[in-house]
Length: 344
Image (cartoon, rainbow, N blue to C red; front, side, top):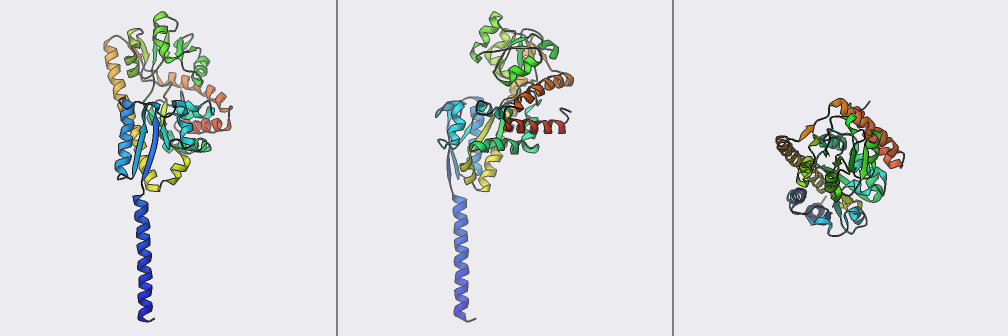
């Protein structure tokens, strides 16, 4: 090989390495300007937590990802946020799967698998270690969406003018219920759920139309003033644990390099942990306050919770027959609940 050939070969290798380096630099410097929507206002606790998610993504990506958040459902109605992302009007959204049960009943089991889990940490374990992420994305990706993860504010509490010591006290208990699966679960256990708007609860309790309400978490119920009227509540709650989600249009998600996907996934896990811890503290503070004011709180025994869960499972089985996707998600939950000893 002569000197000219050696120099030519060296030049080619140098040029190739330069091109590879330039390509790598371009990939690493690629910027993503994302539009997302949430139903939360920025000044609320959940809004501030969502802002923390944005800050984490932007910081960990070194500024390569910028997120413009449309607060308080500023682009489309809350129930339309999912479709807005799926069709590309926005890139992602932070609402909740339960808003999409009219599209497919399977979304109930990603929005609020009622009666299944005692706390958010168990639900996170199902998602990350129990096949939940894979099962849920079978559903989401059929609608051109990708589910990154869930964030749960915690268990809701039942508030009542009568004791709620266990399942036996649910017999003929008239209470405000959201529509859907919950009405079936409680009817199965002998209660009398009455579907009414959230804004009607206070007056209905005052006038005795209802004995109690499934409204929100203990801390939020304090803010609503429910315990100015009723003096009984379940705590910690267990019957309902609605979750919000972090999603992206599937094409947008697939356009991210692996490091950006990992950053968004990590920020979502941090959001989940921070949300649960924040509301855990708020609920514990509310419980301390309520006890000092004469409100009785009922922590159901493991046996009573198992009895409630059995009733919930019977209602789940009915919903599993509605669509193949609902059946698949119910089976995924069943597998994990058996694995962890929650059901037989």
